[in-house]
Length: 213
Image 1 (cartoon, helix red, strand yellow):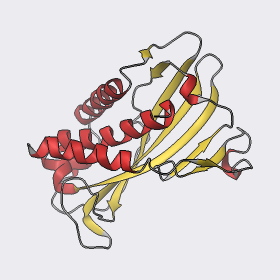
Image 2: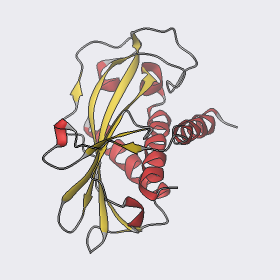
Image 3: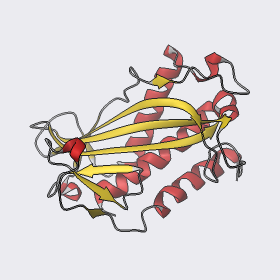
Image 4: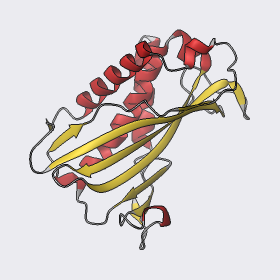
């Protein structure tokens, strides 16, 4: 098995392993999303998740996969060892590559759904990368084996936020936040495969939580 295939397989296994605990919804709305009526969810496999009770996400058979949003990323100014600034900052070329890779991975995992931008009974899925900063290495860091515990400029943490809406009335159904780490060398030298591995993990877990299986 190639290194690239192994990375993708491991990422999906990690994502699915996080699904072994059944999610549980808290009884009252979360303070941050009280106005939207979203309740915190534990055991989602994501760092944090909030959902509207009764959203019945598994009932949706059509999805609108919005383009990945990259316009408001908070990129830390701290230099990252082993890279040049152009290796990890957003450029038009990297933006286009990230958008295309996200679209492709989501379409792969949601292939059983009708993918459409309009119509009734459609679930809109938005995704935004919100922060790139030095991270803490772990056994699941993409692009390297087990790293020394502690903060390291050799590891990048990428944080994303996903939102689910009822397409026809724009009602917010869920907000999900998560982050993944990868080595700065993996991002700068093998960025395409490393990012695809990260996107596969997110897409697989989103599909599991939306479909209920």
